[in-house]
Amino acid sequence: LKRRARSQVSPDRPRAPRRRNGVLEMAADVRKGMPSTHLDRAEFERQASRMTGLQVRVAGPIDARLLPTPSLNLSRITSGCDANNYCPDTSVNRAQMAVFLERGMRGYTYTPPPATGTVFGDVGQADFAAAFIEQLAADGITSGCGGGNYCPNDSVTRASMAVFLLRAKYGSSYTPPASSCTTFADVPPGSFACAWIEQMVVEGITSGCGGGNFCPNNPVTRAQMAVFLIRTFDLPAP
Image (tube, rainbow, N blue to C red; front, top):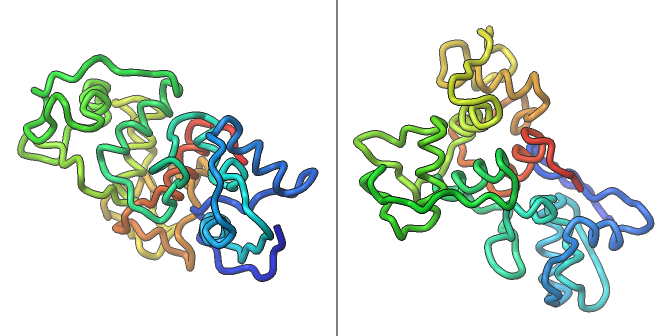
């Protein structure tokens, strides 16, 4: 891999790969055990550039295992959005979040009890991630989105994710210390989840979205979610 130019990288995006015995060897460690599926050069360059924030140029076909994606595949919390991709810029919805959080808390082998389909009006027994959603509710991490529903297909905002992550880490009864909420210009005192966001900063989970802001109302992307999970649950990092 040859790094030609550095672009502006959001603080809550995955860090660029470390050079250790060659970039490709390091990247292979990150996705060890993934299927041996080849990408063409242009597709690899596009995905690697998006994931690292760098302009990546390579020569020849590249094995998909060498993609420098976040280390969630190593921890097996997620295998990506399809066979070859992680989809780092795609928003995380509430159903996906349930899976991420439960496996972040309990480990990649965790499988929740079968869903009943009776906890939320919009989460049927056979729906995607239904068992994880119901377990997240049983753990007290969520009570839904209101009206007896969970809103599984809604995107998760960065402010909401701060609450979900810290409750997942410390338990449903956790409340962060009172805060003056002065770290980010767009998270003033009295705003939703400001103390939770400030605690995320204290614990080194986030440094914001850049420019002195946190972007609390922006949806969490899969790339950002990877960073949040790695830092919250001390998962292996690239």
